[in-house]
Length: 267
Image (cartoon, rainbow, N blue to C red; front, side, top):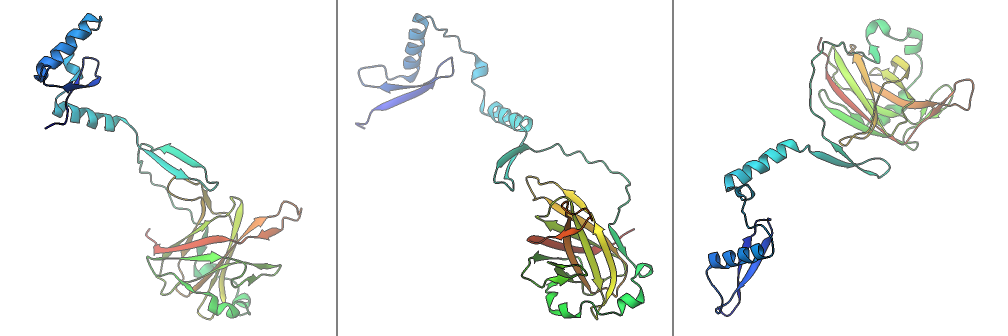
């Protein structure tokens, strides 16, 4: 009871005041407020109270809700260089268009490699490299590094990703994403059968480059249409055109991540 008491109130300008209440002064809060407002009027300040400055609880909550609807949300993210960026969330406007999907490569029996290539020696020595198993309607990833099972080509040795595709359906779409690759990189994809013999080879695939956003890193994407159930394995590696050579030679790339997703192909 010996502690001092204060009366908190808001004046006509919206300023919060704390007035000490003592026994030798007015203890009626209304009288304290009236006296303070009188002092303001003596100093030339207006003592007119605008009722709009003091909304009801219901109106106050409505004002907060209306403000939240008008303010656009922002997303803050850090790019590959460590720079913190902020972007307003875009208005989601979805337009449905009947666009045909374009595949980077089609693996189907009419497009198989010649038999003399299929029956030749190729990839039996890489049997233990296919540790990333990609189930149907599932995904798998592979860290492509120089120290892991380098793949020997006709001209050089490259770092590659090795994926197993068990129990392929009659028609599937296989999506490949590669992170930490330059935009001008090119893909090589080799499809093997159960005996690790090559059935298909697609070279120089450019894919689609997707810029980095607040929710995902930059990546390159490939879409493969697969209509051959004898395919059991995929070997994927990336190269970059070497501008220092006029012959257009490609420089092998490494230190990137490959991700493979399988799904049913629907017409």
